[in-house]
Length: 340
Image (cartoon, rainbow, N blue to C red; front, side, top):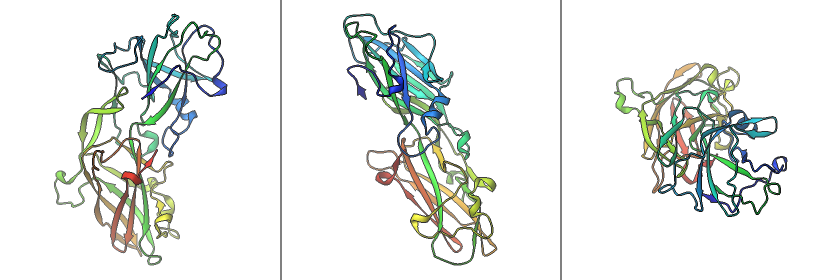
């Protein structure tokens, strides 16, 4: 958590002093690997929600702070060149430091707030889709303890609260390559994830994933999960068309040259974090020299010591390796996983 002596930003476009003492905001999207809300412009389009606590002489403390009645799921939108909201709030009018603590999330939702005593909680429901444009991204900005005094003068500092957003979800990227440098042409047909790899198996062979829960902006922690056994299928136009078209197909065979498996930009599936080890079955169908092959396997997300198997704020890469009529897979995760 970031504790600030005062709150102001370094964006020169946002430096106009607030002579009336009003509270203003500035915000930036995550700085790491490309995501769904991956630019400031997309964040501006999504907008964000704010919880704010007036804690007077104290910093915010989740165990003892009052309810967020200063701002409760306040919608903030971007218009022209500034972030705006209504009704406008003002810094406490006092000669001493009076703290206001702020928390934010994006994209804004009118129904996402959870009214629970003193905690800034939001609810989240995961969407079962492989199309990134329909997936529910979730960003959060850590606590900002801010103050502004009459002695400083409202007309001499910006009085802007800076939010630097991070990802509350995990991202999975899919790639495919062949094991040998040459051979019969390989053309992808479909990738099925979390369907029973064996047609005679029961649903118990599927992985149980988190499909909903609450996120505490004060502790940056998930809780109260709901679960399910969702399946995912990439086929048709969802696949990288270069890998399905005759004359090209799967030609890369080194790790570095693995193809993006999907046609989407970004090539990501968003998942909710999951603490325990999870094994996801898959079936990758393709034609090899004109013959249809549908080998199956599993992807295992192992829980590291003191960590989560599927970790928020991290991107893992799954690489499928086609070896004739067989498919291997490996997962880049843990310390190798990228921050996104």
